[in-house]
Length: 259
Image 1: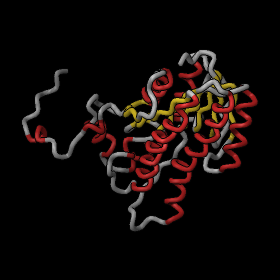
Image 2 (image 1 turned 120 degrees about the vertical axis):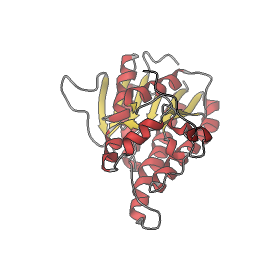
Image 3 (image 1 turned 60 degrees about the horizontal axis):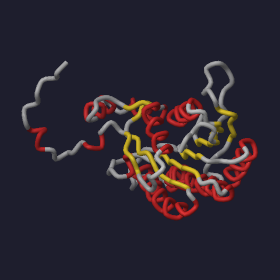
Image 4 (image 1 turned 60 degrees about the vertical axis):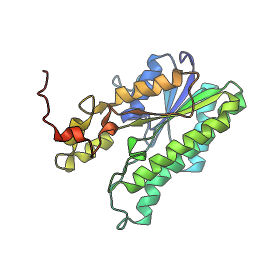
């Protein structure tokens, strides 16, 4: 897909990975509307290129449908949807309140479904095809303690993407997902309260360090542009999900760093 001139919506587009996606799409020549709980701020340091922003709680069906209708009316159509909005959570399964489970699943899985459905309807009605990329997480295929509701929600998004790719393919609509690992975003900043966590994760990344929002956004844009790829989940995690707790090489003497 040639992104120049396309019309796009990005959920969670006011910060973090979503804001980086908005910047990348705008730089590619797309017209972008960000859907978020808060409007984009005004000023010279704004996320550039966004036509506008629409305040929307993606867990609310009526708000999603109204926001997508507003975006469609303003843009005149829709070819691209990046479903990025999400929330985190922390807590053991046996102590977790149902309200906390519902909060995370309501945004991450239900909200992604609602936005996928609304954007898909617009694309099908236009008859011009399109491309959707959802942002899931490597936590969707890892077993991280104290993050059960988050991991389940992201695993659900990955399966939603695969099913949607089959259902929407006949309409010329591709559906894929990017699964970030640890990424320097406001959500990741909350892990500073866990002693040594950020340094440990950075050490276990095959490429070293923690990912940036721009690096993940670049992966999102790449998937949007690949015309013969659909139903795929691409890990944009610097290789942190390659780490294995039973790797025998960890018991061998480690070579000194080369630099």
